[in-house]
Structures are given as C-alpha cells and as structure tokens.
Length: 502
Ligand SMILES: Cc1cc2nc3c(=O)[nH]c(=O)nc-3n(C[C@H](O)[C@H](O)[C@H](O)COP(=O)(O)OP(=O)(O)OC[C@H]3O[C@@H](n4cnc5c(N)ncnc54)[C@H](O)[C@@H]3O)c2cc1C
Image 1 (spheres, rainbow, N blue to C red):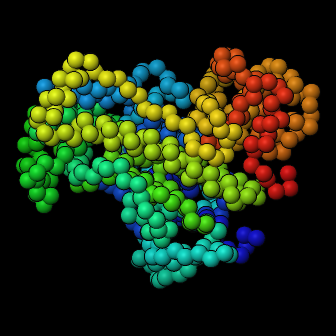
Image 2: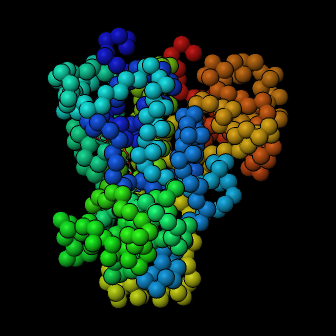
Image 3: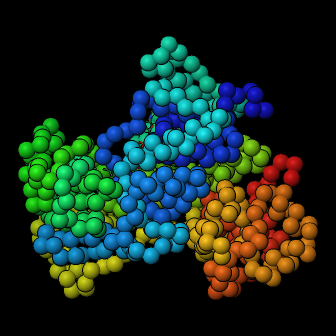
C-alpha cells in the first residue's frame, strides 16, 4: 500500500515538536519526510524549562544522557514575588527524584536541546530531513494528502509530495492549521514581552529559583538557565516603543537592580506577544496538528514546549500502530480528544498565574498583596490532568494519567526495561496466572506487550496500595487500564489497538 505514496508521513516544521515526532517515527520504521523552512535551529530566546515527564520522553528516545548533559536540574521552583520581594505564590520543586524517576524540573537553552533531538533523528534511515524547504500548500483527497514544497536555495524548485498523513508541527502561524480551518478557543491572555538571554562573565548574586516579579510598575521573569546563561523576560508597559526597547542602554537600565554590563553580556533578545489559544480542530482526515500549531500558552509555567513534546509522544505511537501494524485510522482521532483537555488544564493555569504577574494597576496589586499576606504564600504544583476520552478504559484515575516511573530492583529505570511498547505491570498472583494461561500470555505477546518478569518492589508496593492486580501502560506511559483481579486482565487486552492479522 505504502508504495503509492512518496512517504507515509510528512512533518511540516522541525522545531522541538517535529524533531521529537521524527525520532519516534524513525524508531517505529515509518517512512517520514521532514520539511523545515529555516537553514538552522531558531536561535532566539525561547524555552528555558522542561519538566520530568518531558525528560521521560527524551529518555524513551534514547537521548536522556546527552540532554541531561546540557540541562540543569532545578530543585527550588518558581517564586512569585511582589515589588517588595514578598512571596505570593510558589510553584514547588524538590531535590528528590520526582514521579518520573529523576528531577521534575530542568533548565536549559532551547537550541542546545533541538540540536540533540536532530542528531537523534540522524539515526534513522527511514526519516529524511530537508532544511530550507518551505511547504507552500497542503491539500488532500480520499486517496492521499499532497504537500507542495519549495526548495528555497537549491535547484529542486517546487514539487508535490504524496503522503498518507501530514503533521503540522509548524508553530504558531501554522499553514497546516490554516488549511484545516476552524476556530480557536481564546483563553484571553495576549501580551507583548521583551525576552533576553544573558551570559555571565562573573558570578552574580541571584537566586537559584525562578523569580516571577509581580511588580505592577514592571512585571518581569528572571530564570537561572543552564551554565552561565540567565533569562530576563520583561513585560511591555504603556509607552514602551518596540522599535527601541531592546537598545542596550535601555535594557541595561531595566536590568540595573540585578545585573550590569560588568557582570554579563546580552546574547540575544526578542519581542514576543504571549498568547493563550487552543485550536478547536486538531485533525481533518489526513492533516493533524501538534505543538504550537495546535495550542499556545504564555510561558509563565515553562510548559509550551513540554505540551508539544507530549503531543508528539501521544501521536507517535498511534501513527506507528496505524502505519506499521495496520491499526485502524480511527485510533488517530483519540489523539486530539485526549490531548486537548490535558493541554487546556496547563494553559488555564498559566493564564491564571499570568493574571497575578501581569497586574499593572497599583491598587489592584496592593489588594492582591494584602490578600496573600493574610493567607501566606500559596504553594502549587503542576497539574497532572487526566487525558480526555480516547485509547484507554476511562473512568477514575489512574486510568488516563501519566504513570510514575519506578526503579526496578536491579536499579534500572522501568522505562529502560520496557522500551517504546505497551507494558503490563502485574503482581505476583497475576504473573503466576498469566504463566498458567498460555492463550492470554500469547495474546499479549502478539500485541508486543512487555510483561515485566520482575516489576520491582516499588511497582509491587504501588499495586498493593491501590488494591490492583495489574496495570496496562501505553507506549507513552499513560495508563490504558487497570485490573483489580487476575480475571480482569483479559479485559485489559481489549484496550490494545486492533492490529491487522493478529
Ligand atoms: C519567551 C519564551 C519562553 C518560553 N519558555 C518556555 C519554557 O520555559 N518551557 C517550555 O516548555 N516552553 C517555553 N516556550 C515555548 C516553546 O518555545 C514553544 O512551545 C516551542 O518552541 C514550540 O515548538 P514547536 O516545534 O511546536 O514549534 P516551533 O518551535 O515554532 O517550530 C516550528 C517550525 O516550523 C517551521 N515552519 C513553519 N512553517 C513552515 C512551512 N510552511 N514550511 C516549513 N517549515 C515551516 C518553522 O521555521 C519552525 O522551525 C517559550 C516560548 C517563548 C517565546
């Protein structure tokens, strides 16, 4: 079937979302073309933080080691402080391993990460990457999608590529989103900010934690990134001129309370309007959105890229199941139904804390500060939302939630033993029952489900605490379903994607 198409998947855009997806499709052996307009990785200041779940996706790509080497684990969280330095809100962090088996917060420089992700893609012959190739239009009919690509520098000119699916990882101004059409949900926050990366020349006395400075005269964010790099994000105030605000003397005046030209040099600056929007339609038959093309969040929680990585992780195994294993195309509908409410929870929270930071009315800020002073700083964590309805059993948590990553008794992290596959973690009685029921064991094997022989003390204790015999994990580490008794394991197998000939 696939010989009728130039490739099975076209990824439009090679930012972090496209690069994670290309790694996953490469691993699944899916014939993929990636088209990216730019010659090189986007160099301007963007993501500075990713979370433990995102690191876990990098782990599953086999890229955790090099990515850890360019990242700083952060254990002090994010402090929202008023103009007097009093703490209003704290996003927690810990120096203990988080639910994913390692630090739950990491700081980094986005181009360093993207370089490693791209090197990861080089491992796969089935993925071809074309830089300086712009996708100028996308169409589809019942048989195929067609991507019109323009070679921006070489002599290929323009050509049409036929493919089974087009994934628009093409960022906030997405052509694929415009082609799909449809409205977007607007969560109401749209605000220009100036973003600066500085590189220290000598040590400065700044806290490890991220500061969200809720000063109504000039809201700001200060981030300790990895190595010598520090980030300032500075909100535009009425009267600021976008033409001149980034001029060095103006910038140094704004930074003067914290840092001077003797301490650091300005590496790069950019002006962004932070948005909070989610597209209503993430899929139209062969066209699918992922990452910033589908949703944009203000960066107050450091979660925009993380959401794109989660999209890729959700979509990657489903595309693999459909294209490699013959699972029905309808499996791809579960991608948007699952991911949309999940990302909505993060963006809503970012908008809520954005309302705290971006307060510019001094009286409103004073009332806010008095209220926090009465109640004490509010401590919060990232949400851990359930997926929306989709490729899982539904019902109560932990079904549809990301599962913890336990250590096996030999010290390995659980996912390293599982790989990018479904997995059944079962207690002793359930494993014994499986051994005795060869038809069930072979049904699991036919679907490439790993049954961990030795799930380890931590996982067994979790099963016992939850009163469960087994839990079925998807390749993206979300819980597909749980079995209270051994007999329920047969029901779990019904959650596995129907695969041709198996
Ligand atoms: C100031 C700031 C701070 C941020 N901080 C954080 C943070 O701390 N943590 C976090 O997780 N996120 C953060 N983000 C968000 C994060 O940077 C983005 O969410 C992330 O880059 C989105 O990745 P993407 O791959 O979906 O899109 P992009 O990175 O925008 O990549 C899209 C790619 O598609 C290409 N493209 C577009 N159209 C075409 C076409 N027609 N043909 C070919 N190629 C095309 C573009 O050239 C681009 O390379 C921040 C963003 C900003 C602006």
